[in-house]
Image 1 (cartoon, one colour):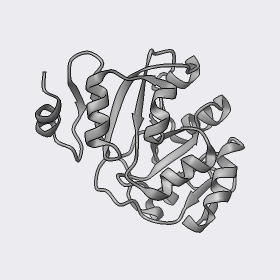
Image 2: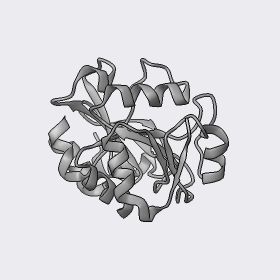
Image 3: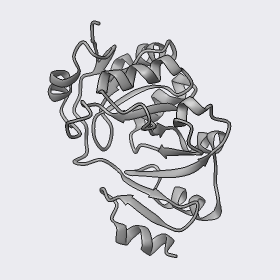
Length: 200
């Protein structure tokens, strides 16, 4: 497969390709991401194959704040987290709503992030649906920040890449809030800050 190079000026073309089931790598406010439209099972499977990712490991979702409640149920604590930390470098695990099992690998939860990146937010709005977005690297390697490093890993394994470096240094903090407050991975937003805002 040929990996097409894009720039951020190609947003409408990238959105069209995503709507058509292509998998595209793009820089985010944290690490480089690899995304597809959320409701295309073939596209999701293509990401799994490109990364060599465990098929039982669900992909996180990126969407706008307005789209969260179309795919997830949101309690009061989660609403506070959304208001405080989103958009930003945090992924919240919600109870899913209206999502087919292939999206969540049969689980009843979905991990969602709202990126602090105007280009990606505009991309999601142009696509018109949430995206499934994971880090753009082979599964046995760490997350990547530079376009050239993503090309070294993923060239001819994915449909396209946006040529610009990611702005962050590490992947997002991951929290689950539907029961007790649980920090599953500490990233740019510290565990202390999470508990300061949300507590138990």
